[in-house]
Every structure is written in structure tokens, then in C-alpha cells.
Length: 161
Image (cartoon, rainbow, N blue to C red; front, top):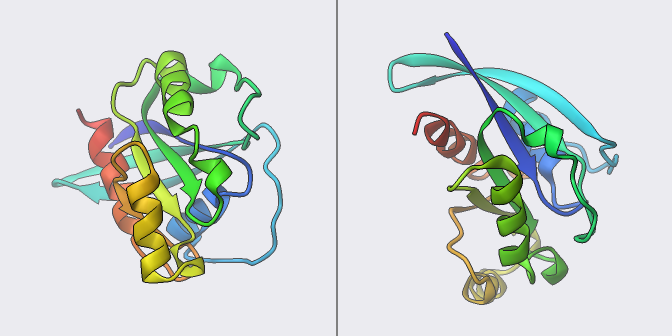
């Protein structure tokens, strides 16, 4: 079995911890508990006939301008940038965030995930998708367990490239 370090990054309150809890424990809580620093979870996934242990680093959210310690990014095989589809401030400067993550991690491809789709109508969601300046890989809902597994499988595939 191979182990791969993966990062979840993005603004505070976008649902990074909720996505991880849903994926690792199949649980969801409405309670918001801010991550301080970094929290590491793990889950073994079967992918393309091999077992991969994902070491999932839940990096504390920022409000945009704070710098994340470079040490968190060292040795990462893949990263997922999560934004909240219902809060424009979490995706309005997505290009700047992605450039910073790429610089710190050395990763070229970042999985882009819009979370909390359960908070918007289909029309509102389409507007957000058209507004975001980068290609969104998946739209998820940790609450409704929608596309969560797919997001982490895409992240797993990134670790093997």
C-alpha cells in the first residue's frame, strides 16, 4: 500500500472539514468548529486495482490574505481547493489563491470543488458556475453526500500523476 499526502485548502467556513468527515466517517454535523492549524485524517481507498492510504491534511481556512505555513505543503501529492458556492467572497479571487497554493506546494493541478450546493437553486448554481474564473471540477454537498466520494477519488487520481 502506498500513502499519499493530500491537502484541502480554502477560506474558512467553506466546508473542508465537513467534506473530510463525510468522506472518512460518513458523518455530517451542522455545528461549525473552526480548524486551528491543521488536522490530519486518513482513509484507505481502492483506486485502479491498488490501495492508497490518503493522509488528508485539513488546513485551517483563511479569510484570504493570511499566509499558510509552507511546511503544510511539503510532500503533498495533490491538493483540493474548496469554495462555498453560496459565498462570493470565497471564490471571487480564486486565481490569486490558486497561484499561491501552486507556488507553495509545487503542484500544477489543483482539484477545484464548489461545496454547499444544497444552499442554492439550480439557477443560482448555474450563475455561480458561469461567474467563477476557473474550471470547477466538481460541485458537492457534504450535507447531502453529493459528489463527495467523487471529489476524493479525483484527488486520489491526481496523486498518481
